[in-house]
Image 1 (tube, rainbow, N blue to C red):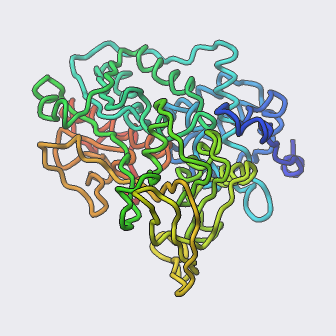
Image 2: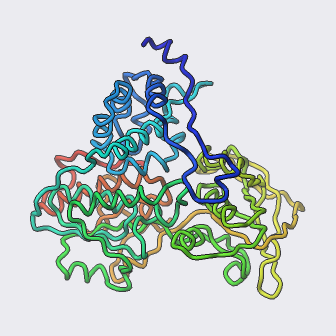
Length: 472
């Protein structure tokens, strides 16, 4: 097929559950491609000599390689091409913000065109393997007598366990919650990431002898020093960023009806029943805010809207998620921010807000929101849920002094992810701040290689396959 013919093929759209059906349950709303649709979409790929899509992928998957195999009908080989670099393709294909990563770098998406649907093609390959009962496990190495403790069972911790266990290094994952998966389980609703996908990832780890311990809080139930005394040769910290960032408003902490984004999602995803009332205000413009609003809608709050202090163009949330949110009837109140919590007898009754306008770009590259004086207005509400980012909880490092950045993340060697304590490594959100699953997966891969070098007494910078980028 000539390039002109490939350019003539329109992007293939995924089938989605009707809005009226999906807002009543937590079923996955986007269906995977059929075989014919996947091959047609794969034929849109131009197989660029210098694939920018690969540079845009935090894991650096060989995207043209797996797409080329897919369009030739070599689905199993396509899967293993992805697995050469990614330990979690089933997860990343569903939750990565592809339009900001691989697809955002696709040459077909420049100008007025539409990028190749790389995420959907990756998902098709993984789902095809599952449906056809293909082996998805890789051989494990025999134990070499070394053992590593992994604190946190999110994507970074899972990646470390995957790579080290395949090198014969025994791994024990300590998860503070009653469910494993970290933010994948307690921070992402099932309609975006079905729980059987996460279960499959842990099945793969257990097949290589990884031990998973739930309900143990490192830093409280046992310390890092205890782990060292128990014979662990190294520790990986992958605790994520689970501490909600506060608005800083008076009575934010002691008013009934005020709950923070990741706290709400965690409690709901762990099975708790929470009644937010009918009218819910969600503050923020990222994926957490979107997930909170869509979850509240599914749990009976009929009037849900988002308050965001910038314009729609500045929203960091995935464009697909914003589209789904608006389809489901959630309104976004742009250029507005809360300034006061209104309560009666300790219970929320409303929120006082101010209009904003956009000034010059800030350090994030987005235009800075500025208050419009004398623009106050009041919104009546049963609940307000700030979802404006998260911080790192440092319970795990009690008793050991680490260097941390001014943002509260662990200070690590920017290339190897070794912390200021030489036998402890860290990666994922507790190093990057709240970021994507793919970035956490890649950092887990880097940390695993660093830990292997450390255990073998090798220099951490020599004979390496993976290193973080300095800007990470």
